[in-house]
Length: 322
Figure 1 (spheres, rainbow, N blue to C red):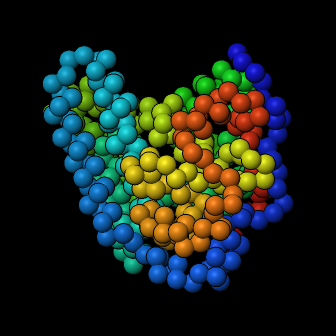
Figure 2 (cartoon, rainbow, N blue to C red):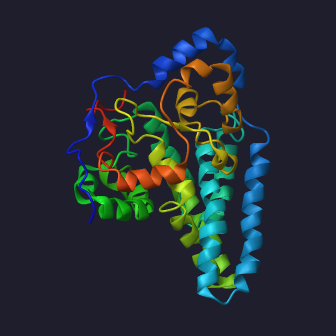
């Protein structure tokens, strides 16, 4: 079963999350960063191209007879595109497709980007993700944190391997258990639109093609190089540091989500411009721990007994501001 993890509890902190204070320091020194706030006019074209690429793949996969080939396509191609579309939904959650002045345009575009993913997530993701920014590490509100049960069950090398493989299930169901919220009207609309699209795909292209979409989405959220960012972003690889950036080439297909310290410091800056934040204020980012490989992150997480689901900084619940 492999080595047992050395941690027996989360790293509890009484300090505020670090991004708000660092944002103030950076803006005091480099007020020109405010000029980067807004939305990316190129984003909608890039994300639309990914959606259309998956639409084209429906015709290709329909002609494939071998399930082995379908699974390979789902893992190496479709899953990567769908994961990028999930991160497009992440950009959309911050209104970075059309700006804060056009919230409904962002939501509608989120429905469109959601289609190839196969599972309705665009609106639900926004509902929880913005709280992850505002209440990072809160034991109840931040559903990005693993539960104590997860940490206890997946506490050795083999267990962590299974946990990484099942990561999409935890991301889908953990919020419903830890911090359940009544569904919003837009969530129901998101679900109906997705179900109609899925039914159209099954009717015209068959179940194999639908499996290509959904299996690809799930595979690319688990034991997959692009899914390394789920762990690299906030798991405590160096004591006392709770957010980590990655500046490698996988940022090219993930809307620079690897620039994660920069993103949490300035969530109003579109992903395409996050490298500019680092260029302007390098002394704030070059001196803190960072990752060089998402694949290495997955390997280290699974094999290093010092790292596991417990390796997260938590804060006692304080409740939502009234």
